[in-house]
Amino acid sequence: MLTIKNPRELTSILNRDRDQGKRIGFVPTMGYLHEGHLSLIRSARKENGIVVVSIFVNPIQFGPYEDFKRYPRNLKMDQRLLKQARVDYLFAPSTNSIYPKGFRGFIDPGPLARYLCGPKRPGHFRGVATVVNRLFRIIQPDRAYFGAKDYQQAKIIEDMIRKFRLPIQMKICPIVREKNGLAISSRNQYLSKKERIRARSIYRSLTEARKQIRLGEQRAERIKKIIRQILLNYVDKVDYIEIVNPKTCAPIEQVKSSALLAVACYLGSTRLIDNLLVKR
Ligand code: PAF
Figure 1: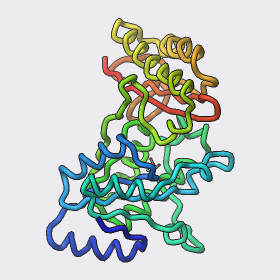
Figure 2 (figure 1 turned 180 degrees about the vertical axis):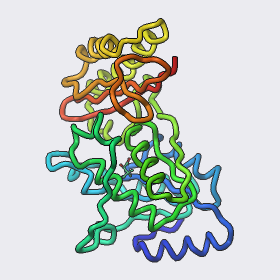
Figure 3 (figure 1 turned 90 degrees about the horizontal axis):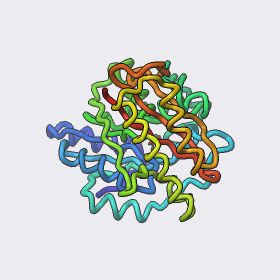
């Protein structure tokens, strides 16, 4: 595996690979890799001749009081995992090479960012759309792999691909969970042992809501109440509980055909998100 820092160097290497008829699969990450990332990489490995993984902790997607500085980083450990996963290129750019002086290519994340995490994390999705667009321009992948845990992020990127008519196939891969249901995330490592146990309630609240939907409950307010009642016993603060249209991320009042149940909450100072797509 080659680790490349310079965007131009990566673009020219990938141009050569493309000229040889190889398809390029791309997995963007912020590093501190876990089983969730590895499952994306495995899908990319199966479907493409070349696999590129980026590691870049993108400063502009963090709010002023968020965890940019303490976000976990361990490049050596990541490189080991990527080699084992038979990744071809690790792209680990500097902040200056992604955002050169005078950078103005900010991307509006569009209407999907109005809901869920959008209002709670102002500027976050603008930062995500901007960096992913920048990475797409450098790598020009045939396929890009995102996890469904960040469902809204994936939908925003899908929308951006459509809007800019980028020739990229978007792959949204299932959430990877621990045996107890907790969605795997780099931020789980902030949790104490006790918080980690309490965090299981997030998935439990979502599956209980799904059970009630399957038993016939359609009213979003009732479904949110079921989730809230479970969460309030275990988490320190509920940031939001929403029942939304999976296409637009806009809240719905009745679950008719399908719905996304989405939750954001705090355990201590750690903010976790999770979701469940439910079809009736
Ligand atoms: O999901 C993430 O890790 C990040 O938001 C992403 C897509 C790598 C952009 O920085």
